Length: 241
Image 1 (cartoon, rainbow, N blue to C red):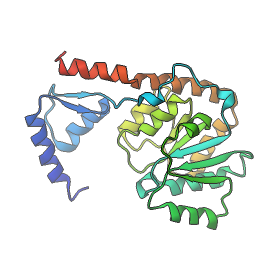
Image 2 (image 1 turned 180 degrees about the vertical axis):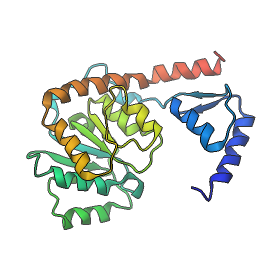
Image 3 (image 1 turned 90 degrees about the vertical axis):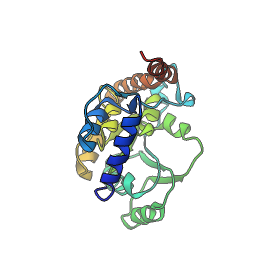
């Protein structure tokens, strides 16, 4: 990052100078942008998040009683996604959560290493599903989604999970993550210590009433990212309002 920072900074400054508007994915990224790239504060900057795909839009909260005792990860199996830490968390959880399963949906360069790690540590009740075209069936059944990435931009996987009433538990690796999780959007864990994360997840898993309330809350927050709502913000921006 440091090797390329000046080149990025020059490119961003050029783009800012040549643009009428600069759109970032959440409000907190604006201040971060000013600071990182020494850009003068001006009215060009605004924030509009990415929309939730229409296939994930649900008018009604999915029935929580139809969910299974599943903790889910959806995404690439790559270094930055930090799936090995998730396996370390599950290693501590599995003896305490009889009847639960950790499902890993996705593929990538770290898959063989991760499967080997699970085998060497005798981690049971973990399923490597592999890449799927449409993960909606997994969101629908899971009670929680785990995301512990080393860095993220604006991870749509969190919003997709919310739309199915699946409660995200995430490390706040970026302001984009924070903007999705805060205000009833899930649970933030401010630690990469597997024991701390495991205790947080366990506390949710054994409290079904709390999970039901949180499931409804995250589903409600996902409505903020409906295509029509985000489209209207773009229309207003283009119209100069």
